[in-house]
Image (cartoon, rainbow, N blue to C red):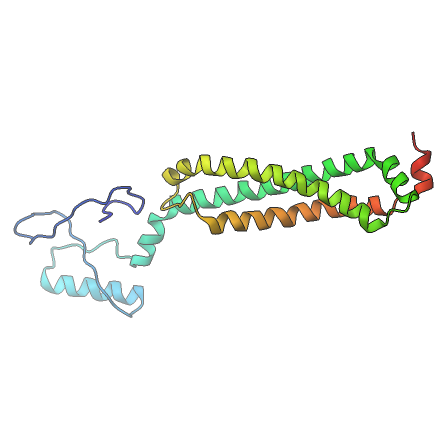
Length: 203
């Protein structure tokens, strides 16, 4: 069993023996009850005192509180990883938006020529969006390889973390796809509204 903490990698063998075989200075008493914690603590103290008044009763807490306390470090790590992941996603989205805006501005003359030759605004939007999807595909390949490489490290840091969870990879892919579409939509929409005459006059 996991004796000291929930994140023990190798559960220890444990045996239970009588108090006469293993003398201890402090004992733990487990009580199953539906009574509130305050009333239960008073009842436990009264029951112990009625048996032996010299035995002190202390640190009376619910098991859920103890479990929550033992998960404190893991919860903090998970929260920090979530914050860093959200910041990384925001930075990636902003960077992709800036890159697509810059490349769209550099192609204003080309877009104007396309529109002057009969290209429809929907085709221009599709062109810009396809460029963003190509960047997403390259980033997804690099990110997937990095995630698989870092999975071993995460398994050592996070409790029972599975490095090969296809659902998580699929969910992250969906989030990145939505973020990429949002980052691509504004430059694509602006490019489709370019006036061909104004675009052709630019140097």
